Image (cartoon, each protein chain N blue to C red):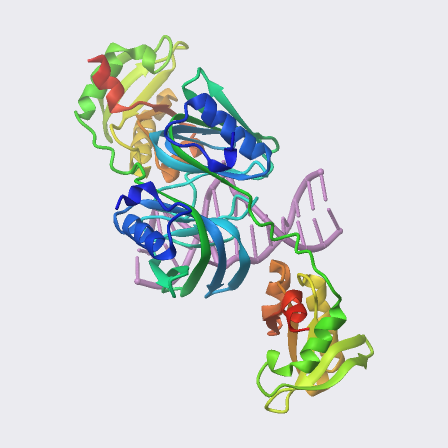
Length: 242
Length: 242
DNA sequence: AGATTGAGCTCGCCA
DNA sequence: TGGCGAGGTCAATCT
């Protein structure tokens, strides 16, 4: 049985349940479209009458029952919920999802399933990164225009009292530029590090630029707070050019 | 062309785009699973590298790019956005969604579509209701146990200085009960109405019960705030028993 | 229409 | 692990 293919109109509820359960257990995202009623009870309560809806079950156990128009779901369960798939009486499919602390319970009862769809999501967390940060330094030194037009590299690993600046240069207006490079997702720490270099050279009133493949939300916040800039650069870009 | 069937692996991008566009224009919810990059710019910014994701386009123009584990989306656009579907160079599908005030722009670029799924959602708003509220009154008078065991109806449309109470009765403990009946979704107004009757008869320290097929979130809030009760009753239940 | 406020907030960060 | 505050908050209700 190829559960990756998802449920189609010909499947009965037992077959549908098996496909969906297997997909969920294998770590796939499962999307179900069909006629269902939905009951939520816990901190609050909300019941939905029978109707055609799409429901998403994520590998973490998070469940989303989509509302027809709003971006927000009609009913849902966060990722710390325990979600089960079972058949009730051979003609109804039950998705039950419970979590404790706070206690919330969601029950979706499908009387008819039009279709389901299973897929393995790309996990944005595990970016398997090859090579080291120095390769990215060299890449920027060789391709300064990747920072911006007329950017000039003045110094590599320029010393300050707070540590070494990855790349120090100047822009087209002769303004000093401090470039901090991270080869993986930049965290709050990375921005703080940049901030310390900015403080060390505050007499120059330099621009601060963080270069990384991505950045955490907290890092982004501090970045915009301090009016520093962000340039997206992936280690793969560096490797391709090598 | 039957766009209801959704996109499958055999469709090329032009065919896929047509199916998806037609489904969206016809007011269907569209779910797309495939490899895509996502760019958001506006009040903030967030970019997602190429990866397999599911995206939902709702009739209102709301767009949701699902995150792999969290209940919250990776990227999104609220329902007041203008969402367009187009083909870029015959091998990429673009979903662009913009809104003003505040300005936000979301661009999803699909390089590969595994599948799409279209369906007409049940609109929870338009509950075409037959009959009138009085039928529900009569039903409750004939079936007082539907309120609760040993509930006794004392008066129909009991007058107060603030208007007539739909149903006035007492419970098994001889406590007075005010029942307000709505034949469609109860709003804040319905709860306020119940509240006024409670005030009119405050000497009796009565219980307040709202009977309706459903209730708005704001109504629910006031209800629990005031410690009133809610009983779900649909007009169809009344009609079936007739 | 703009401002305000609540949410089953959710979620990330910090102690 | 519990709390604390922010969010592209969103969405509903007010003024």
